[in-house]
Length: 118
Image (cartoon, rainbow, N blue to C red; front, side):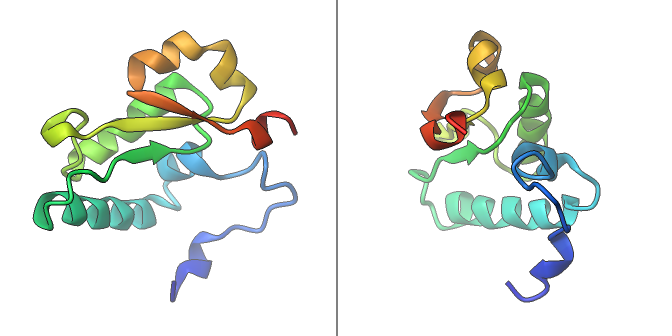
C-alpha cells in the first residue's frame, strides 16, 4: 500500500502494541480504518457480495469490540443487516476469560491457537 508506512509505528514488541481493535480505535490509525471500512462496504453494499463477513483481530475487551462495531456501522457495515456477521479472533487470554462478554458483542469466534500459546 503506497503511503501505508505512515500508519506503521515503530514498536519494540508488536505483540503487545498497537494492533487489531486498539489500532482501529486509535486517532492515528482512524483514517486508514475508515478506508478499510469503505472498501468492505463497497464490496458488500455496492458489489452485492454479501457473503463477505468481518472479523476483528486482537480485541482486548468486549467494550473495545463494541466501539469497533459502532465505527463499522457508521460506515455502512451494520451487524445483522443483509446477513452481516462480525466475528472476533479469540487469540488473547482476555478473550478466553471473558468469553461470555465477547459472545454478547460478536456473532462468533475464530480460535487463534498460535497466539494463545505464546
